[in-house]
Amino acid sequence: MRLHEEFEVNQPVATVWTFFEQAELVARCMPGIEAVEIVDQDNVDVRATQNIGPMSATFQARVTVLDRVPH
Image (cartoon, rainbow, N blue to C red; front, side, top):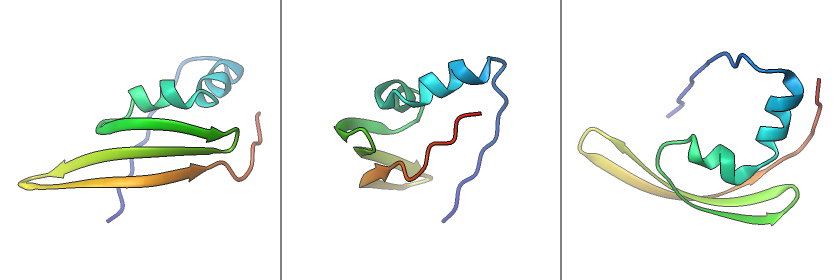
């Protein structure tokens, strides 16, 4: 399954970049996030539950930042 969403943020790039560097704040914007654990500067463990119709699934995942290219 692939989910895709786009949106525009009417803020300076530096402000948005600073926000995305704060995993706890980003997690508050994502539906279903139940837990966030900062492992180190480049790795965050998350637990999320998603519902689609009558089905529900809980995922444990590690998010890894591979490259930072601020504009």
